[in-house]
Image 1 (cartoon, rainbow, N blue to C red):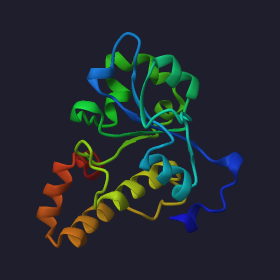
Image 2 (cartoon, rainbow, N blue to C red; image 1 turned 180 degrees about the horizontal axis):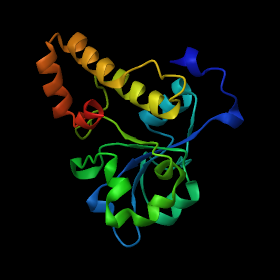
Image 3 (cartoon, rainbow, N blue to C red; image 1 turned 90 degrees about the horizontal axis):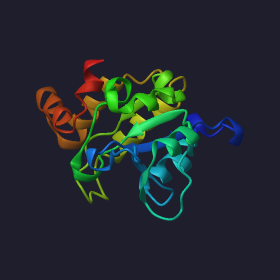
Length: 185
């Protein structure tokens, strides 16, 4: 991955918001949860993919953010993660849900640069799926640099290799991690 993105200059790096759309944190004053700089996902985005985390907080890993805060960040890319309570929406939630009408003004939403990571159980800090997370992030952040990667084929091959399963079981794993939206595209 680094080889494909290492030549991106500081000023050209897209901004990426890692965002949790938990109903627990969706209120009149809050839009969701942002992953701060002290998260593994932020490290992957900034150090391996060579982009910039849009949420620059160093005060904690995960912070509830308001609609206004998200609008002021106006990220180039939004990557949805599993939020508190295990809520894991497909990207379409930002495009279609009435309660996110204001967030449709974001560049990432208008340019259809919203994606979702595989479902991650709470406190799952070390997972075999980090390469999958990385590819989802990289392909979303730099679609032109990863256009040769067909996400559905890559993902199923990943599951087959890592878990030693056949195509049908790989599809079941994909479904269990709530990634069918990727296979169906």
